[in-house]
Image (cartoon, rainbow, N blue to C red):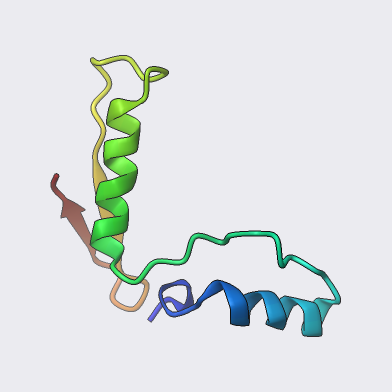
Length: 75
């Protein structure tokens, strides 16, 4: 399983401080628990962006690092 799916800001910030000596306590690494929900939120953000023309097709997918399969995410 991809480790990005299982981290939280606090422990990750502490890990970086201990291992690398870097203070990133003011950074939000935007952890998520539900990958499909996260992809949907990102797609919606792009669809609503005034910087992206309406004729640009926004799509999303989830790549499984264990199996190599890709699953299309629908809004």
